[in-house]
Length: 303
Image (cartoon, rainbow, N blue to C red):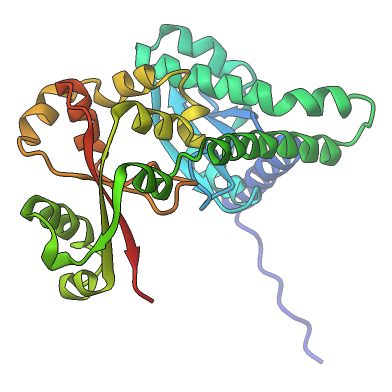
């Protein structure tokens, strides 16, 4: 029997492997909601968070530096954070507790607001865990409690929305004429709004033949309430005016010049994640112009 030949390991690659293993171990030992990390130079940072703006990803990492946030990455599992953190921050990454709170003081107002919302999320999500899990001595139990407290916040907002009866269907039922129309019966601007929305994801003729359209004129205050009952918006902004100011910041002139016709907004049929299926830009322009009520469509699909 031939003895396998042993080849020497290149010291350079051996060192890289060991540095990566140390980084992986550091992340495994410290990863939790709100954990902050930086590269070895302390110039680039990431904070691990519960994703609250979509149901597609349960977690995300928000990236920032001394000037503010510059990107974020949705994650399907906590384990996925390991590779993302190492890819962005390198093998010599380190924990950076308090970095966000320290840096955001010097940021622009919009960036500062987002940082404050993340810090509030960290505090709210950790409140139950820090108190109920204080004497349990188990990070797994604490993280479970933290996760449950954040999910409870989502559920509370959904219940508020249900009690208020504020959804796309509810608003159409309240302010529409109760009739569903076919595509060929729509006014031209309503046809344009629908065709533009379906252009990139469904053949136009197929979409036109399968859809039924409910038309309504929705008071602005009702739509504002709809927006503020969306978990991703309510968790980041204290009022619709704050959200509106953030949305149009730096783009007001471009938006006002772009939307010169009064197209309808498309009420969402899946109100859990979005207030409107389409027309967010238009809606904010209509707010600026003082248009009230807002023309809207609610769409149902033939099976």
